[in-house]
Image 1 (cartoon, rainbow, N blue to C red):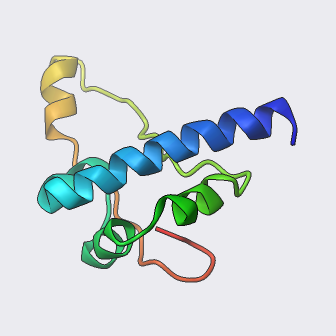
Image 2 (cartoon, helix red, strand yellow):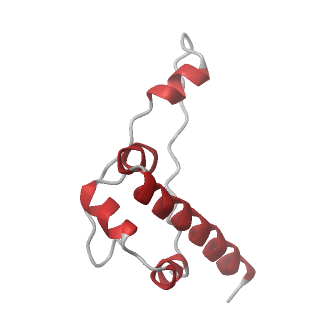
Length: 97
């Protein structure tokens, strides 16, 4: 495994662990912060550490970055507070979450 793959797997695993803990403590916050629908939240909450590790080592980023554009008349802090999650679909065999 290359250094890039190792770094990406480590970041993915930490992200998935954080998201899973959020699903277990506050599902509504998980929907907003991580952009997951109810099925994704339930699926992630039930995953074991080994399942998370398998997904983390997929060599693909599981983190979605939102484009940052703030209107010139609105402070960045206010804009970030207004951001809504980007829910693009449901989980299937090719999209784990």
